[in-house]
Length: 98
Ligand SMILES: [Zn+2]
Image (cartoon, rainbow, N blue to C red; front, top):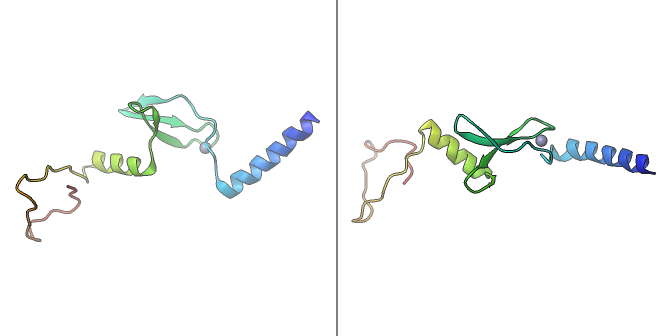
């Protein structure tokens, strides 16, 4: 009986993985290499970025923002106190976020 349940579970997880991809249910403990903290899925090997400060995996949006910031594509610029300022289009630089 126990063997039958394990076989059924294996078959269901096989088809679930085909349909929905890996669920990343078995992961390593968080570790930090070169200032990046992440977990690694033991089934598929995917790196899951992790926030050591908040003790949770990062969302896809947070990972994109982190990669853009480390690549130098995003700069955080303080807004002027006097209100919005218009910049001529020829002086505007691409990839600047305020
Ligand atoms: Zn996985």
